[in-house]
Image 1 (cartoon, rainbow, N blue to C red):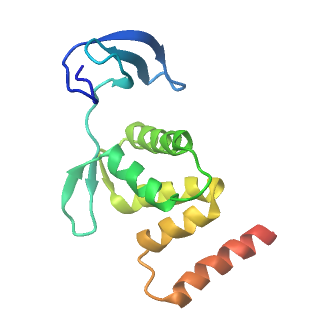
Image 2: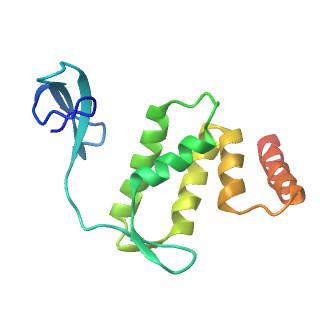
Amino acid sequence: MKCPYCGYAESKVIDSRPTDEGERIRRRRECLKCSRRFTTYEVIETVPTVVIKKDKSREAFDRNKLLNGLLRACEKRPVSIETLEKIVDEIENMLQNSLDREVPSSLIGKYAMEKLKSVDEVAYVRFASVYRQFKDVNTFMDELNRIIKNKSK
């Protein structure tokens, strides 16, 4: 395993344990050259899920792309990276467990919005504004009013 700090190719495993779902193995490693520690995850290789984008092009599902979108929505919000990684894990598991190997990007966005709504409403609105491509302030206000109405129920 290549060290992310110095690029040295050899490291030793300090700790190894399964993640919560048992789908991955988390390994704590130490670089044999610079002695810095880093974490890696081993994942069982599966048939990749293909994402059908809005323009009908196809690409392999990329969990980092989803995580980056969630990170942008949660910028300067009290949401931990662990929570976001858990959301991405849950969405990835949902996609892997479905029988469909090709999934529209809109479905992934819908799953992400559902998860964000229960974690942080501001992050949810930020994500929704990009995902739903709000055209003006009125569209934005409609979404806010929907949240307020659901909250009061």
